[in-house]
Image 1 (tube, chains in turn yellow, orange):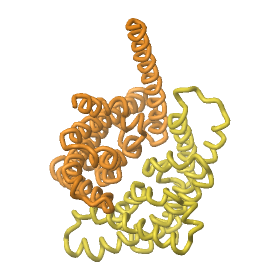
Image 2 (cartoon, chains in turn purple, red):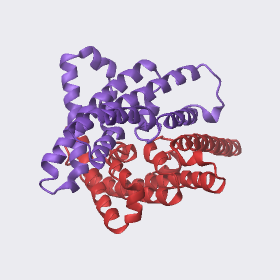
Image 3 (spheres, one colour):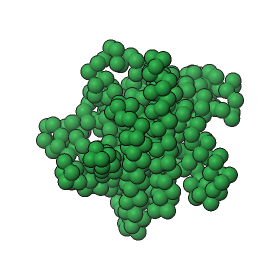
Image 4 (cartoon, each protein chain N blue to C red):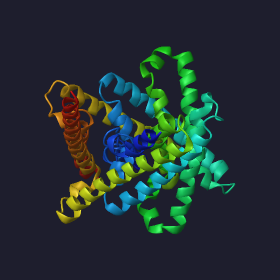
Length: 192
Length: 201
């Protein structure tokens, strides 16, 4: 139980994907202009990370490792992720059109979110079992969502301020993210 | 014809993948803690970029439009696996420090972005030039980040710059600097053009 708790805390707060591991920064910068779209993207990513890390784990344990073809890991994993995103696209379109419309293009973008592939790889490297894989994947997704929503909140405020010309756009967003990451480093001390 | 090559050649600078297009930000921040890692990952990415551009542009009339993205991803993943195998067998020290980020080259948006925006529409030679130029642009950017962070963290002993937070801040400041320089350059070339036009008139 204690180990599960520490996995959750680490994945969400102290070892946050975006702010500590610097993975998944593209969508973090690209989709953090509005809080509403940040929530949608965060949910979609959480869902995909949780499922894909479990599916990739199973495939690695039951197919790649027994056949000793681990070198195909990268190709297989990215194909699984691309397929999952495609399936999710079709399923949501059919059964949850409102959610589908609110996610829009973000859904397709998840394939190239390196947090998804990164988590699938990390689970294998860390040697987690199936339960831990699922918990870790979900927590990583939630951590991503939290960072995204917090960042969107800050950027919505920033819209109304006057920013020096060279800093407009991504430059100020990066500096903001850096200061946010600094704040999160303080949390690492609390749970260490 | 000539113009096509030069515009592909200068793409790495004027539409720098990192500072202007803001692609491939994850490896730029994660592995720019020192120059060695930055150069290693930069060239690994450049290799994949050049060869995937080459293959994708050679196959651009064969790959059906509907399945082009999965096809591109498989081509890119193949080259990434090659790089991964090469680094883990010949460069074990580099593998220990940037190994986790090598498979993530697959999802580096620079590569898929260039495949979709450039290699799928242009001939092989131009695509390879574009790959080299964009690749060098990436190497230059990530090395600049690596050098800056290593200087701040190791020479000036400000340890925060070795962490992700410092990476974000250095990236933001360098991007602002790049914006200033591009702004100055654009103004100068505009002024030059205007004075030329005045002379002609």
